[in-house]
Amino acid sequence: MTSIDLRSAKRLVEAIRLEELSAVEVVEASLRRIEEVNKDINAFITVNAQQALAAAEKLDEKLKRGEIVGPLCGLPIAVKDVISTAGLETTCGSKILKGYIPPYDATVVARLKEAGAIIVGKTNTDEFAMGSTTEFSAFGPTRNPVDRSRVAGGSSGGSGAAVAAGMVPLALGSDTGGSVRCPAAFCGVVGLKPTYGSVSRYGLISYANSLEQIGPIAANVDDCALLYRCISGWDPMDSTSYRTQLKEEACVKDGAKIAVPREFFSGGVEDVVAKRVWLGVEALRERGYVAEEVSLRSLEYALPAYYIIAMAEASSNLARFDGIRYGLFLKSGYRDWNTYFSKCRAEGFGPEVKRRVMLGAYILSAGYYGAYYLKAQKIRSLLKTEFQQIFSRYDLIVGPTMPTTPFKIGEKVEDPLLMYLIDINTVPPNLTGHPAISVPVHREGELPVGLQLIAPYFCEERLFQAAKMVEECLRG
Ligand code: GLN
Image 1: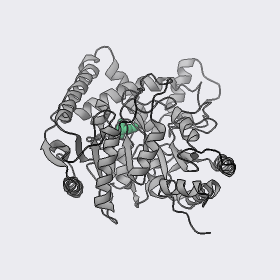
Image 2: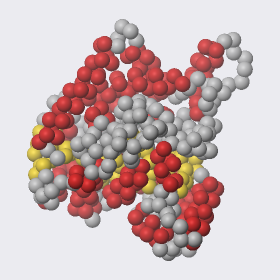
Image 3: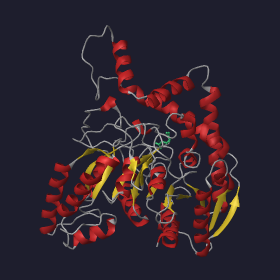
Image 4: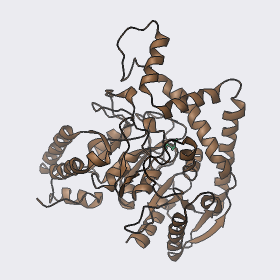
């Protein structure tokens, strides 16, 4: 059997629609590829082979009957394991949820199914999405398909690696402070953090709910856009979701202006990263964009503000995991409930989650609330104002997604601060709510480098337009 290239969603959908390929053939190809490489890469926590094949068969029958099929018809898709899937184990990369089977689908998952996509499995993640390398997963680290001795990025490392290794054409991640864009940059694929409120969070197991969005990952910009259009839009089940239409008019004309904050290039940005990102900026200039250096002064405070807010929200969100309602359940023999809860949480949570829950509780405690949490919220406002000021003069903001190329597994895992620092450029759009995309700018054979573009609220189309130009110039 000739092998099926799983790296272009658009082409695969066409082939399935024209009945050149059946959905079963495509899903089988995806499962074969997973079988072949996942042992080593560890992108999947759960593979959903039987249900996926059954869904593909049903879809093929529909096609034969000439019924209308959705825009993702027959496409195998991987879903990060923090997103609820009815009847399919959802662990959040944690021992505390081992064995938990959600009774309902997240809105995004329901939309994927409606659009004809087929969920082939749940992908590896740092425990409760807390991390930047997928090394904090209770199920072992994900390896980077480009160089298996290196990290795949995180926390949606499994989704990034699954796409990069050609196991699936599309994947979903979640991005609280960079978790879609970081693995996209490290694995050499495209990832989008949508505008806060444009994709429903219903069924996403919360880490820090005021910051996070579910986002698409794909091998190219067109596929990333295709998936975004299917999952976005108002949802009555998520009160923070907006009633918006996609803004085609958000696309920019000749002479569009892009701001390049010099702070995005300072402090620990590797030379090779800066060089490749500037080549990306040059590519946009060649296409008629005007690029100017600007200053983003509050960037200096963004990282501490992010970690304070994220940890505060995490400590309150994770209080629901008590060893009774979901997943882990210990056998009897405990004197009282408090001892039981402590025991479950001590056994069920890993070290990074414990660190954050404790720091979060401290940050929110009566004596320190004003000094940390309130101050962080003020910085958040400051950053928003500064972004709005830049967007009153510029159409887009650009810089490196990550300050480094993917490093070796184990290199930073013992040093939490060093690990937090690599999020410096990805956290600002989460604090402000703006949409941001990472697009590869490295050369074939080199370690991946991602360029990040940030747009005004709900201007995702503008991101796709510019990212596509970068892709055409540097990857074509
Ligand atoms: N690395 C960041 C953190 O650990 C971002 C994680 C995420 O976006 N889920 O909080």
